Image (cartoon, rainbow, N blue to C red; front, side, top):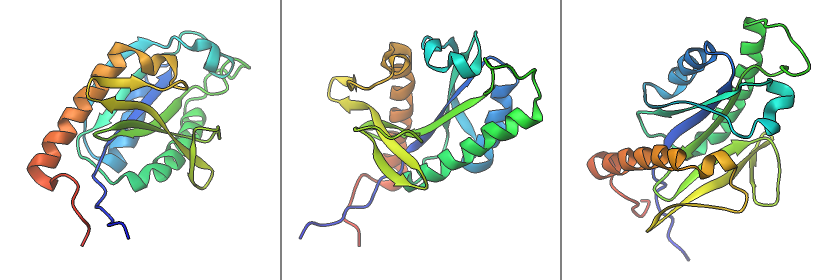
Amino acid sequence: MGQVNRVERVIPICAVFSRHAEAVPWALAKLEAIWGPMVAQQAAIRFESADYYGHEMGDGVQKWMLAAQSPRDPVELADWKSATNQWEGDFREQHPYPQTITEARPLNLDPGYISQGKLVLATVKDRDHRIYLRDGIFAEVTLRYLRSGWTDNPWTYRDYRSELMKEFANGCRERLRAYLLREDGFRRVQK
């Protein structure tokens, strides 16, 4: 019989997509309420896959990457996605922009986490490479960390393939490794 190892903590992350600058501090406050202080915030970049969200978010969508300071248990991922789905609706109700067919969704939040070996995103869309968690939430390994660094998968979104994203992920991974060495230790057999 195999031994069950303790699951290491992970760094929670969230991609924030919007064309409205006020969406970022609003989302940041919501994320800090469940994750605590955020330490990594990647500057806004123009979202290159506008054809993917353009029909519901309009033109000029930007993307920000946020990361929590404190590592958390990865079992919480489905809770994070359920919360961010609710927050998207809350933001739409609290910020009544002129709703058009091209902006039914003024804010998109994609939570996930970074472990030592992978960047995982939560989604509500099922595909052949995604694993069901619960409550209609699936998880996908978007990037893998190998000895040579972050590696794409065939399904990895174009914006997650960028060097800027991999630098962000690497910074999160380094902070996680420092935490594990200092506070928690690496995987051990569960007692």
